[in-house]
Length: 160
Image 1: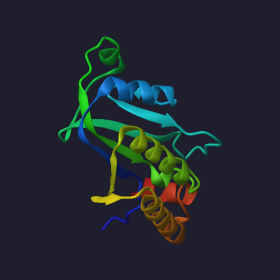
Image 2: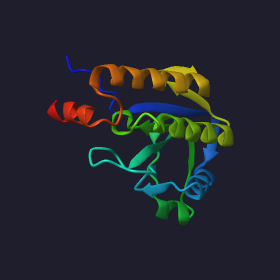
Image 3: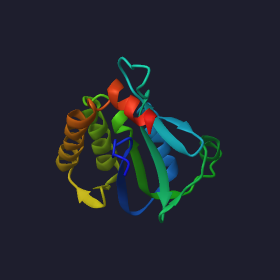
């Protein structure tokens, strides 16, 4: 059985009703997110080792459980629709532990701005519990593989 290196942890932010994609797009762009094809990503700040990711997080936009494929051009041309869920991915194994707090802060801003509930590992979470659970995963990575964002963890993943 392959060890769980926690390469990617996914948080779902869910709305109780569909929301307008264009408003989400404008807000994310104003916060520094880049759009590529139909998803968004936020670049990481600070020193980045060659084995680490330069993208802090990515966001996929969904409606009724399905990906909403709309590019930035579609949105700018007025061809955007709605969304009700954001699937937010954090590359846990590719970032040093201190980036958990940055990730959690971004989740909190998104959830508060759009009135979303937060789900992690299929359970609704408070922002404090999300932070605790991600730090527990980082503890596990520290004990078993040299820590989140470490070269030794990157080597173990590469060898799989």
